[in-house]
Image (cartoon, rainbow, N blue to C red; front, side):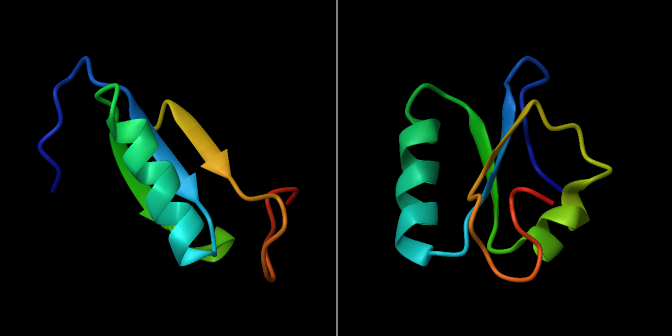
Amino acid sequence: MFAVDSLQKRLLVVEDNDVQRHATMELLKLPGYFVMAANSGEEALQYIDKKIDLVVIDFNMGALTGGD
């Protein structure tokens, strides 16, 4: 599915604002992180079985928020 170096850290950005999500992803890619994205808490749940080292999440989203 994804070609990732086994030592490369995997980050998931969960943000419902397209501009914020894209900007955050681009900043996190600069140091060489492998960055995945979800535009909602519900979509982020699709990554629950993936190896993720860090989740960067918007706390104030729709139905399923960062606090949930």
